Length: 293
Image (cartoon, rainbow, N blue to C red; front, side):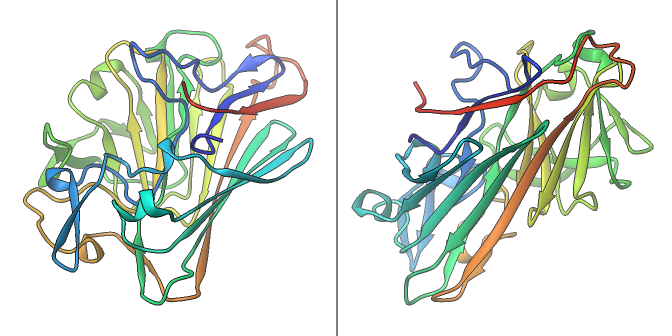
């Protein structure tokens, strides 16, 4: 299964993930591993040696093995191979479980280190939600954080590297009014966020809640006039501008001791407007996982 990627999630017949279109973006909800964001020069360095590394790592382009499946759950696994070790010279196991419940989709992720040396890595989720997702115009939607967040995010270079400069973000309390202009230059990356949950709200009051376990950063991203908003959760982030150090020394990396593992999770829950003003009724969820085109 390519990338262990969810390709469709719907509630009461309404698709909440965006329908992939290559003219905007050729993915839907990729899993990011073993890094998040861009590596300086397109490479990571381990023990002084450079290894090519694509943006957001390679997991999204790898074939995962289906370990088990039921009517409401599927578990996928990716382990190191000769191909991955040419880019990332570490033994690892990455497991991704998708579980459906009433109006929710949960991803449980486990990273394991079967090797004899510490395992440095970053992990992320990059789902693209339909925008708008429940009627109204795109600029009538907003993000509401569970906690108060800083009203600034790092400026990012054209090559995806993080600078020490900050750009203001027009937060009003815990809310952020959305517009395509917000993302004309770059993603908004809320590093070391206080919130472990946020809400993507439509003008009628319907909302999608994202609740994270183990992730430190939130990022919001879209493309000009694209019909999606990515609400991303990360443990790490792109290289700082000018970074040329070891992969393990990159800021915001996780590390596992030999034989250890660590769990992460994300739950997305859809809540219709209470008076059904969005025309949404009660219904069953559906989710599809499949190969990327």
